[in-house]
Image (cartoon, rainbow, N blue to C red; front, side, top):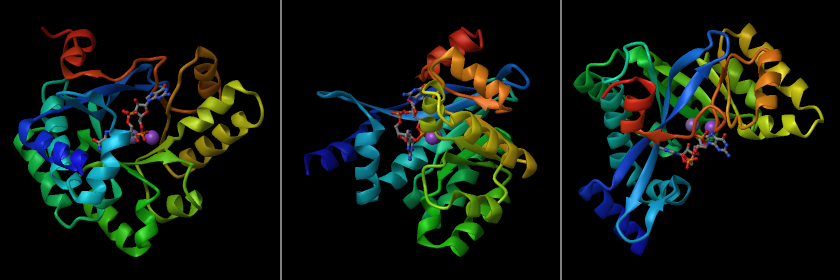
Length: 250
Ligand code: G
Ligand code: G
Ligand code: MN
Ligand code: NA
């Protein structure tokens, strides 16, 4: 397929770029870090969304070199920020299942020189589908490297609660759909409150994704959600913009 050939060329030619979206703490009222989001600048088609090419990369195994590049570039960018800002990287299920992942993470941390606890890996509930035992073992071995682990898109998968019981995630990222619901009345508040209460009790951070309106932010603050991310605060931006606008560097 043409798209697969294009993707192979993109890796070789360096057509990818990372964008970064701020992760903001409501409790501390300050910037805590950024989520790295890959962008593909295709020479003819322009920017292609990861929603389009990550599934193909997963199918073809090209996710391994792409994911490795993302890890290295994210750590490299973070090495140029203030020392306590974190960088979050999305790890897809196939990447997660690969025995080489821990080594790649260690190598990315070492060559960038950042402290391991500044790197946060975002995984989704779907990694549990394959094999819960094996997933647990992998999570503990990654935790052993000193990196943080966040459960992304929380609430959209199956039997989410059992996963929270099985592994002490550092952070639960509440899926955007629950935040969207807040504006439409209904029982959105109660769900946010339940998740934050549970996460607090389990010693996990909470972050609400996709915050677009000030009303949503107010409700999230009131219901005890600790961190937020979304277009209201900032859209994902280029590495250069992170350095210039957020950190005040030249
Ligand atoms: O940034 P955007 O909303 O276009 O991202 C769309 C989807 O692509 C999201 O689900 C996001 O998690 C995923 N995504 C973005 N960057 C990466 C990446 O570097 N690796 C993986 N595996 N997924 C990514
Ligand atoms: O699956 P994951 O949570 O990693 O996806 C993150 C994606 O969400 C990114 O592609 C990012 O562009 C998108 N995103 C971030 N903030 C908002 C927002 O406020 N609204 C919407 N619609 N999308 C957002
Ligand atoms: Mn994510
Ligand atoms: Na998410």
